[in-house]
Length: 184
Image 1 (cartoon, rainbow, N blue to C red):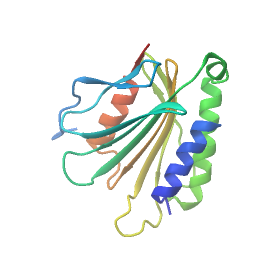
Image 2: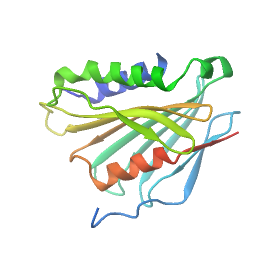
Image 3: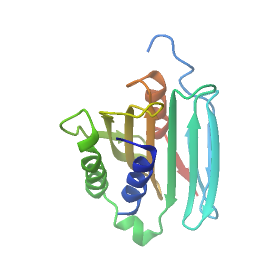
Image 4: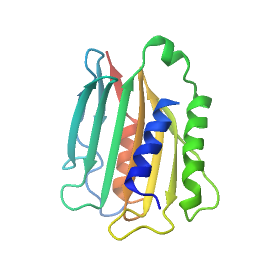
């Protein structure tokens, strides 16, 4: 089962080692990393966003959901990396971490193989995967998308849970992360 607890554990592990749609994007919003700049995301208009900045580790946690209901739940953690930690991150190491996380979840998924997708923007470089829970409990989300990506000096991990696959909101979240920027 792709339970919420498993998703959070996977996100932390990864971090440490069409037609009728809502507006595509809203105004870019800045989310502060204490003493180390901010992450800028174009969050779609109307989405509920809760945020928490942490000083240990230097990071910002975001949770996004639809204006009403629980059609999806997006959790994003962005951690500031000093130059030594940043030097250890490469596209290959990020892809490897995401692949390892996906492999750990694959036994509970409908899919038999993992399809890695690149997440690339002007400042964003990373990878993501999507899986379908084979046996979700009542009320649990059936679809999972998870990613790790670099944006400037930030390493971010997102988990997107939804009741339907590849909805416009899923695409909007991907676009927000693809176009994310970092400012000092």
